[in-house]
Amino acid sequence: KYKDIATPTRTKEILTNHGFTFKKSLGQNFLIDTNILHNIVESADLDADKAVMEIGPGIGALTEQLCRAAGRVTAVEIDQRLLPILSDTLSPYSNVSVVHGDVLELDLHKVVREQFAGYDKFSVVANLPYYVTTPILMKLLEERLPIENIVVMIQKEVAERIAAKPGTKDYGSLSVAAQFYAEASVEMIVPASVFVPKPNVDSAVIKLAIRQKPAVDVLDEAMFFRVVKASFAQRRKTLLNNLQHNLFRKDQKEAVIQLLESIGIDPTRRGETLSLDEYAKLANEVVRTGL
Ligand code: SAM
Image (cartoon, rainbow, N blue to C red; front, side, top):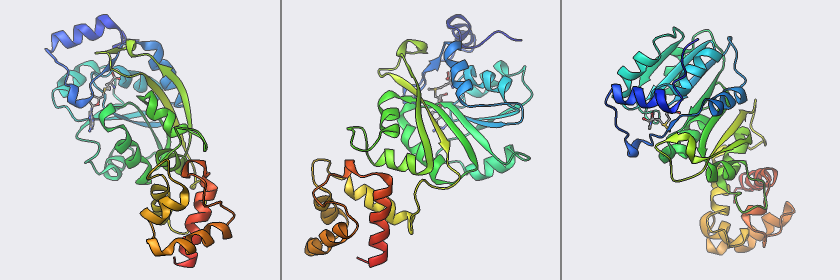
């Protein structure tokens, strides 16, 4: 049993010893509260038979907890200056490797093949850099990696948007995209005081339990997402208006009304009131009629 990294004193000691200074542009806010880390790890349902990928290990605060809870840990870090620190702080653990790179640029299928041989699935657990939260999550979801759970600390507002239900103000194309691939739940709200330096926003831990197959059956996934995007383009406009302006032509108004009515969706509704089922029905009807 080793001394935890995630305490204010130990973190300060590590940073001072290595002369490390934070880069705001890389979203570097390090966790200094072991209770929060234990809760994150618990949400991820890890055990010695599981593999986990961390994005942005920083000085290893979460990484060491993952090393204790999982069989195999791979951490992807963009900041070269952290590599010697990590090789120091993670030296007690033999089940971890650090991959240097930008998670948005890396071929994650390749990383998974090389790092997780012998595991058919893995989970992603991270305190994400907030400037790239959405692109990272969308990459993880869209690339159809063999992921079981994603448990990540992100901005509270983004977490609420991801988990939002139809008819609420937070419900949007991000909610639909995330819930298409996963079951989303906000696990806990986290105050800014558990980070150094303190971020300007509140945070939350979100869990995405990846579905075996998407939540709804769609004939053409690209069309499904085009319809969703178009429907939310201007929140105050009706579904008809948004679809007509962002997906179809002006002279197709009557055809769009007919299509919507044929599947029982009132054209005067707003995009934010449609469920995933209704979006699937709509997109499938667009494909079927070739409109
Ligand atoms: N896991 C540590 C913790 O909880 O204390 C650090 C979390 S900090 C919010 C985000 C980390 O992600 C930093 O270490 C930062 O250097 C790293 N990072 C930022 N952008 C990245 C990217 N595109 N790819 C990989 N890592 C990135």
